[in-house]
Image (cartoon, rainbow, N blue to C red; front, side, top):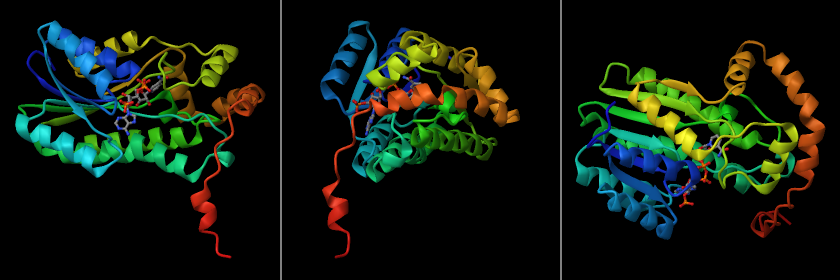
Length: 280
Ligand SMILES: NC(=O)c1ccc[n+]([C@@H]2O[C@H](COP(=O)([O-])OP(=O)(O)OC[C@H]3O[C@@H](n4cnc5c(N)ncnc54)[C@H](OP(=O)(O)O)[C@@H]3O)[C@@H](O)[C@H]2O)c1
């Protein structure tokens, strides 16, 4: 897809990878609609795009709410059609599953899986109204490889990959294409200090958000439909699909280091609401 003048709805635009995607798309002359909750950050980003002579509309919306999804849908309605939707907003939590709160599990699945599904559904009529529509879902290496300390995050990204695959097949006879792009560890605020320190200790390679945004842009321009970023991660994704036991064995060797960093994660706060529901 060539991007000049194309109407692009981008979630997670206020984050590390999102802001870099905005810069890359603005350089190509796309008409941007950027979404997030951080109004001040979005305003700064939109200002920078307009300074470059670009077009950038801001929607301050919590995508975890129906109102947030509705607000984005309203903007799509005003535009008339959407050429490209990039589901990039996401959250992560590095925590042992047995101590993760029910709220945290629900939040991860909601923001990383349910919200992009709902937003995609609401925007589909506007993507179909474009000459050619494209949905890009930003997944993760952890959407193909289950990894300790990220159990709920992995579940959400495995789900997103499944959603992507089924939807792409369901829409195969329409003018809307669907694309899955899976970055590996990237230097953004989604990764806590503990995660960054653990990545260093394990020798995990990390990418800059600018490089990741370039790869996303390239995938869109070259009409690629499945992209896994980083070596050896893309190899391990294939290996895990064919020989999960081999990958499991190598991850199990990392477990003592992972457990050490999990132990340094601050304990979750007590949920009084849940305890109030215990019948007495
Ligand atoms: N960084 C990595 O290591 C890495 C690796 C693989 C995949 N990814 C994926 O890449 C995507 C971007 O992540 P990032 O690294 O750029 O993280 P980030 O810097 O933390 O940005 C996350 C973005 O998501 C938005 N967001 C979170 N909750 C939201 C909500 N309830 N409503 C609306 N927007 C919400 C945030 O906006 P506000 O704060 O303004 O609400 C922010 O713009 C995510 O899907 C992530 O899973 C990241």
